[in-house]
Length: 377
Image (cartoon, rainbow, N blue to C red; front, top):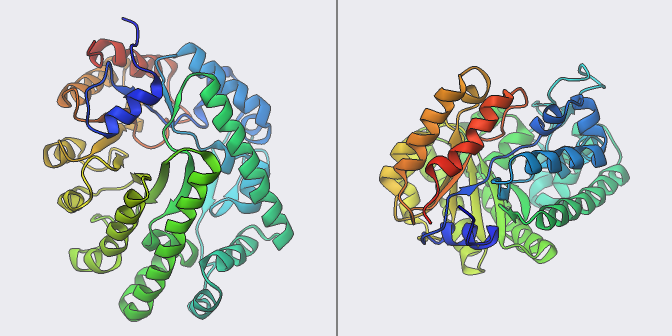
């Protein structure tokens, strides 16, 4: 059957928990695209035009892919090594030519730096963090950010030219708990949470205001009112309920409410296991945000608790793409898609990135499942 909605109409309707002609198909393709066309990951991550041609080929081979959850402008080598979210190791540089990139965590920010953060603000401190993480000058960081914005617009333009929707217009980083944890390092930040809790809480509220303002600015820059907001380290998998209710949930709730009040849709890209925290999301505005899960959270439990409240994005497990048979992936996709009724807002996706080493026949099975199980018209 042919589609009767545009990709943008389908995505908006799904987020609004309204009926659609078929499910939205929104995997995060990224490094798989290079493998799909037979290039090394070094070529893919250091040559923008080749990378975009590879993304185009994936779409041509699987045109049912209708929503681009794009990432590459912040991961491409010349940008990632100047202003990427952490210290990168890249294929063809520190790693073998066909290796997947790595982001290495270490203590970039010391406890003494909290005073600098409070005095100068998060945006200024983050520039200091990027200088240290990438061992580059302030000028190189700023040049990298300018290039990233240019490539982001190119990625947007190419996506729209294909007739796809943009799952989000900008990647605005993370909830404050993660933002601080990343620059401080996970181990040391968790110690801070216990040893200097009042200070940590104060800094996170400062960050919250900055991240909200950044989301607003990005919507103006891209013209798309959906933003990626990441969260991992504050999940119930890592911290207890008491700390979640002090250091994660208050800021997240305020952030979502303030964004929604400005007609901005947060796509909460929440990796790790949030199963223990799912009921909290019922306190967020109905049909105004997306909860994206990476297969660590029980998506069926999430549906049980949150159906009729928010759109859910996910969650075909990386192992189903890499070590399972195509029929096993198909079986899971069928279960996942059939769990959600039309109007319950499933955004069908890979669990986080589609693995770089995914088997072609399993990728085919992933996309085939849309027509087999996800069509309502």
